[in-house]
Length: 258
Ligand code: MG
Ligand code: MG
Image 1 (cartoon, rainbow, N blue to C red):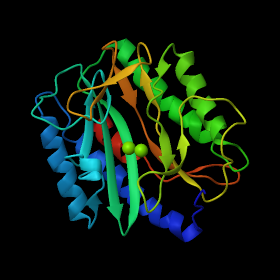
Image 2: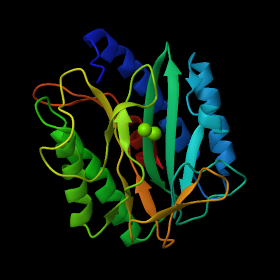
Image 3: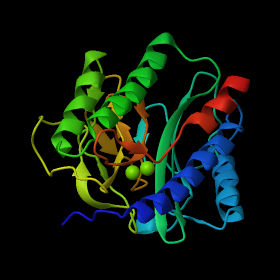
Image 4: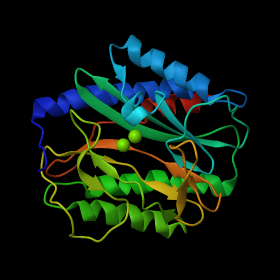
């Protein structure tokens, strides 16, 4: 059963996802060589609680932190630590909040200082694959249309799509049906209807698609040790054009000032 949100409920989800957008922008202000991922986590938690919300990941399935911070070959679910960011790193920051009972969930991959041309291309294609997915998230299409669009764009750059982790529905729970894979066939899967809210979140690898889980029980990294990028939007399906409940504008205002 897919839970379709009323217009009012979509507005509540927009509020929680806007708070995530602003939290990621706050994190962006602090990303530079020498900063620890644990420090970024503290910044995010404080910002979320100052806005009358609760970090959604902290305690979720036992996850210990507010952010998932995944550096370089780490794909997702990295645990904030004493690791100090270095020039040339990339860091995927995934953030979730609960505001008035509604979940927000978004991710962005940041460059730390100057990064290589190849890694920049990986980030750009991952971001663009997300936008392609959004373009397919219209009523009457199917989940497979979104999946196909993401995969097609990512692979056109010579990159590979992680299979083990997928996007999801979002609402009063962090993970609701349907699953939204970043690979698939057009015209397959559940039908998209107005009011369905989904997180589209391509996880794209520079090298091979295979991943493995680290012994901390959380961190997923690429098997070949090559970098991986991750972007995530929450999107309300609508009739002609998806309504993106997340924005990267606040983040990019910060980045463009640096
Ligand atoms: Mg997320
Ligand atoms: Mg998600």
